[in-house]
Structure formats: C-alpha cells, structure tokens
Amino acid sequence: MTSSTEGQLLVVDVGNTQTHFGVFGADGETVREHWRFATVRESTQDELGAALSSLLALRGLGFADVGCSIVSSTVPQLIDQWTAMSRRYLGHEMLVVGPSIRTGMAIRIDNPREVGADRLVNAVAAYDRCHSTCVVVDFGTAITYDAVSAAGEYLGGIITPGAEISLDALYERAAKLPKVEMAEPRALIGKSTVDAIRSGIAFGFAGQVEGIVRRLRAELGAHTTTIATGGLASTLVPFIRETIDEVDELLTLTGLRLIWERNQSQGRT
Image (cartoon, rainbow, N blue to C red; front, side, top):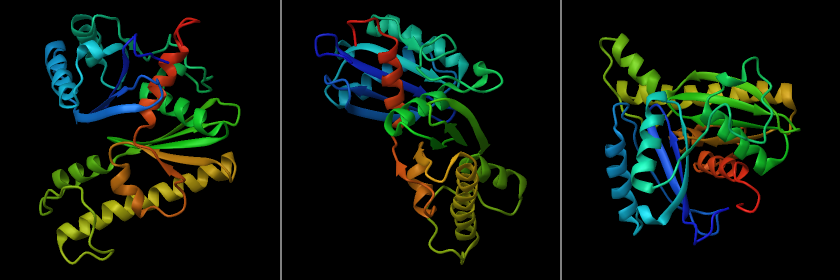
C-alpha cells in the first residue's frame, strides 16, 4: 500500500486496442482517477510521457505525485517504452508483470509463461474479491474467459474474437455491408442493415457468453462467480442474462495494485 509521503501508485494496462491506466490514492486501495486512450504500437517513451502528463494535469496531478508504478502489456514492444518513460519522467523503475513477478497465484497450465499478463492480473483481482471459484470475462480486442479454482489456482481459459474484430471482419469480407460502429441495437429484429448488424453483434455475443459461462459452471461448480470487465463490457453485458454476477471496469487496475503490493519488501506494504 502506498502512502502520501511515498507518492501515489500508477497502474498501467496496455491492451491491443486500448491502454487503461489509473492512479491509486493515498489510502492505497481507491482508484483516484483512471483513463483510457488508444494503444499506438509505435509510441515512444516521450509520447507516452506527454500523454501521461496531459491526462494527469486534467485532474490536478503531476509526475511528482507518482511515487511508484506497475505495467502489464499485451504489446511487447511497448513494455520497454513504458519502463523508459518511467525512468526518465517519473524517476523510478516501473515494475513489469512477467514470468518472474510474484503474483501469489499458482498457474496450472501447460506452459505458465504463455498466459497473458492482463489475464493473470484479472484472475488475481477476481480471486482476491471472491476467495472462491470464479471466472473473469474480459471484453476487449478478444473476449477472454479465465478460470480460478477454489484454492486460488489459475486453471486456464478460453479466447474468442471480440466484437470489434468481428465487425471489422464482416465489413472487409462482405462487399455490400457497411462499416458499423458499436452501438445498442434498437430491437432484436433490425429494420435496416445497420440495425441488423448491431443486433447480431449484441445478441450474438450475449448468447456466446451465456453458453460458455454455463459450460464453465457445469465444470467448475454452479456457484462459480462470474465477473465481467474490459472496455466493451458496459456495451455488451446489458444483453446477457443471468450468467454475469458483477461488472467491474477497474478489475485489471485492482489486480495490478495487488501484484505491486505482493512484490514489495516487508515494511513497505
């Protein structure tokens, strides 16, 4: 846990489509502010520093308020840029979620090094909340389902193409279909091509999630808690019946905080 004298904790989750980051307040447990911006794979340390400085300033914060930081990334080339940015502008080494980091969670898959950093971070946060069998459904570039046992072990998961990928593929492969933005459908039965596509995305992915979560609960137990997160969770979850117990858009940021705490020496918690 951070203190006001040490500075606040910056947590950064770099996804394929969006980067989500936030600052935990002096109590070490509350997200003071958080932001999302488009992930640009060619970003330099200076561009990341400029973006971070501008967004912090919008909430009356600055580099001096950040005393420590941690990053998870699904874009390998950006890890070096974020850590270099931290050294240059924040004046400290940024902790990176990777194979050597302490998470407090056993990984029960064939090759533990394969698990995505964001997926492991989500699993840590979900189990810390539930202390029982749970599943995280992350609505991002892909939709990922990650399972955690009652003993707090990462069991593995399921990966499917996300809604935006599906929309892009539909536009690229079907010559007569227009490019459609994600939005709530007006009704189940679309009265226009755009409405029909939006209905297909919303109810199609809702049906997918419902079916997969039911199968997971049949294997893990009927009382398995399911938590949704990710940038598109608020768009798609309203169409999903019963199978989602909670929606927490800050789940990944919370997991990053927990992992940062678990990697501090005694007396600096």
